[in-house]
Length: 257
Image (cartoon, rainbow, N blue to C red; front, side):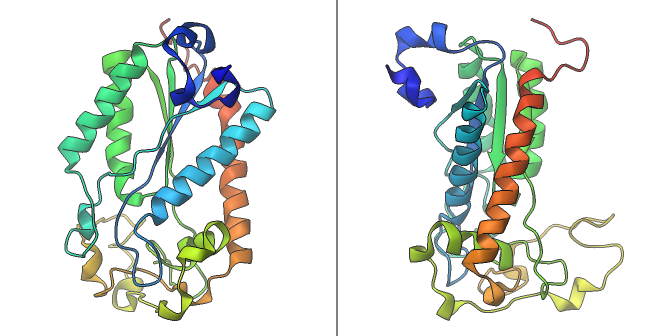
């Protein structure tokens, strides 16, 4: 019986109607294929998104939650890395249309709850737009888990790409794909002291990854470790698992059925 796997793509057409319900939570990991410096693979964000989503899904199912795991989106909005070799990216319009088309397809099933598990920061703003688009067009209840990378002790708050957190996570999940001998710090100290302009500050700015360093790294991966990665992974999985019961029952007061 393919329903036993709780993988959406394993269901048959005949099983869809019985397996899925309006409060079933479909989980869609979103990653990226993009440069992560000389020490990490292009699929770093995809590896993390798939691993976090799968672990939280398995734990949620074990706790009695009605979750289903969708195949991940690998090619996404990575144009901030367009100047670096290896970036595989969709234009914002293309990705939004893709996500809307997927939402239309999900709306043709009995399921009405869709959770994006995103591990690529370049997707976050677009996915927030998509949440409302899918809500308005197809009456889906839509959610986004997109916890940013935790900055390391030497990153001055700028460990957002291929730095301490992502490198540690990959040392935990896929150490065979990490080359720590090639890891080099690339922290933008020149702007780290700004009070008003910066990541997470009142004034945002347009940027490309190679604005900071030729490698595209934004952070300091040199202090990364598998032990730290295991802790960071457990934190993400725990937070996501804890959120799923609320997602499964979320109703702001006037949700249509």
